Image 1 (spheres, rainbow, N blue to C red):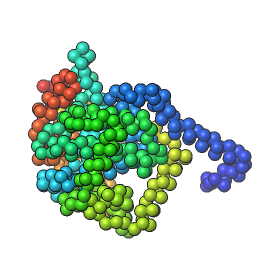
Image 2: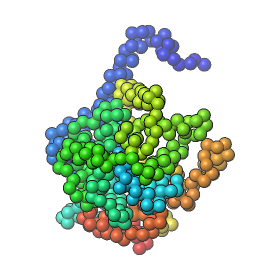
Image 3: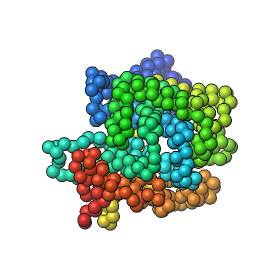
Image 4: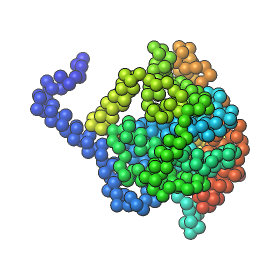
Length: 419
């Protein structure tokens, strides 16, 4: 049996032919790597000052779903962590009493990701009376349902407008900073403006007041807010420790691997954030190793790796209800870390694999998918703390309909085919 290697390839083709193949691949990779970027900028480049929300969603998908989903997603995660370093926010979250259980923390982590991707990826297109379709089943109101659910949950707590605005700003600034720090390229002015336009629309639908008129003004406001309010507090630390435990829980404890990831997680935090969260400073060597590894990955992605062919999404691109037993149709995310929330219960061989993983210590017995993790799937109007999953449905559906421009119907309004 012949083993393939670069040396054998060169021997077969000769140096000139091998060099031609290598250069040809690099040229093809460059064209493909930048094709989607160039297409988007040709399409929207002259509209940067008059982007619609729909334009903004299409442009934002370039970095979040195709070019740099991991780097941008990490930026969003760090931005979200920054909200935990504002004592007025962390104190409110700690006082809810909902974040002492790791399963509850994981559910909040998963639900937040689902709702954010839903309103950034699903259509945010308000319907005028003249555009109302005859067949309402063709509408996709998921984005509005997710926003309405968050609004319903937020109304249960006393949250200042400034805290709302700071949180909103982190979802604008986070992706930009994530691409700068960990991506294979920075975001273009068009992409930055698209993210700003998209999240401003989300902010308006959440009734957040005094949103700055430009991205530059929002960044300036957020930096000033951090300088004043991002300070060490025990409630900050009480939030971050169990959250880090949940995030690193999928890692094995063998050879200290989980502890290493825990420390690398700290290395990725900006100094002001780390200090406010009361996390220990990590050795400079480990920080350099983490950042160096990230830069090597970025180099590989930019100059050697082929681009993603299909978008990397957590939620279904199109939701096709399929409920043969007459129950309300439900959705599932495409990934199930760090806990198996909404993952179907394993059957047959999959069940055997789960049992083996538990037996050899690769998985905790309490983390096997089942009813406690809502293995039947999720509905947007039920997301949030478990104690609220049976409440607020009618209000959420009504508010989503008002945002959309027409009342929801069918399974979106919790009416099955037999209703």
